[in-house]
Image (tube, rainbow, N blue to C red; front, side, top):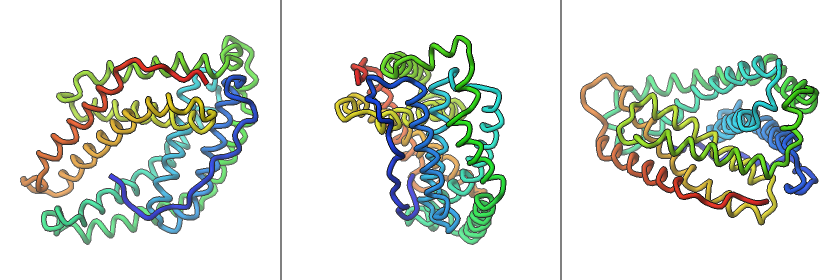
Length: 297
């Protein structure tokens, strides 16, 4: 469920000069990571000013960076990453609480739910403002500045680049070969994990949503560094993943919304909306299943 004003559009960071056919995994990862850091910095002032869409875009950039690290692991792992990961988790959670408040506020003020949620509107607005003040303080803090400096240093010259072990070969592997193998493994895992989508509990569905989100953001990041000829196959992979992630996210928001009012009555049309979102998610999951030709770059 989307909310907020339109944030400043950010152009991706400079793309690597190599063609993708020539690109190795290190060059690809660094290009994606630099772009994520540019996006984070570009949305900082808008987020501090209270722009909901800027906050959303900043949080997406963090998620994309984390997804890229996972996708290119273990070649990107080193002694510095666990601390950076912990700090990114802090920042993501800080933004996430405010993002959740934006989504809940939009639902509370929606004409369908306004009467049902009438008693919580004032409390919701107070909580929303408090969370945004916390976000602004966090983004002005020394902690945030140190994190961005540390991430830049790690991407450009971290010890993960210097290691001499079995991962040296992986870092030098062509992006083409690595992507074809790893994307198919991730796709197969999503198919396996989603088999009981209609009956799985909320915790398992949330875990599936996180995996789908990572897959989606990696596909989008690869699309940004690929030449136009390779983008069509990536878009075919991306479309069902994006639909699945959005349906699962909207379902999670709807279920969280139901719990914000201490009453036995569910929101108007809750059961019908839940079934519609489950059906949408299941249809998107089915579209992941056909074996599509992965991009040859």
